[in-house]
Length: 319
Image (cartoon, rainbow, N blue to C red; front, side, top):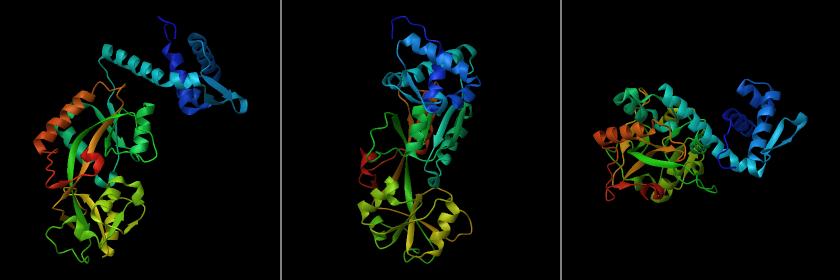
């Protein structure tokens, strides 16, 4: 780009909309302008930067792909839009709420977020549900959300996320069994005592990094999976199948009336690692305040207590 060039952010926003939706009609609808106006904005932006940013293909010229220049321009363009929003917000003192997607729903991540919000009700946080780590990471990269909360781990066969994360809680995990499980009467269990039981999972175990690493570490060779329909159906299976066990947070509330037992795991105690995740080049202005509150509430509740002689973490979390 030519030094000193002034970019029109409306044109940049038009390009980002087309890049995200890969369709002129849908991009124009999102921006509440006509396709003709959208095309003019994009053409003028290309003239400004001196390069074609999209290949206009498909029926009626509506289907598009990015050129090499467009692919290089996309992330800086997102940062330019974010900077513009922050600049306007600073003048108006009306910064948008921090949008936080959580995942790992069977482990109830909202419990932890709620504790932080109860302690700091002025954080102006908008939590919502994300599907899983890959989908939340993609949403952060697109700018659809500002941060994520869940367990961050390497994704096999994928490049690094390109995001920053900070560990904010290590949560003990219990074994949960039905009333007829052979170990249901135990006051506590060592993880290895579960090796003759079947690990009950809310999805295929190879999609669940924590459970897969737990099974490998403690000799659990059998597992079974069903659809994740929520906590109650998940626990009903445990109640009715005496061969199965599951892993759930030690302080997670269990529904009344299901007669399942939550048994502490010891020597070692598995810990589930919760982290905040965000884009290093686009931190929300309220992110520092959120990190401070997680640190303060975490210190009060000893969320990061960890004794290597007593506790177990999967390799990536331990590192």
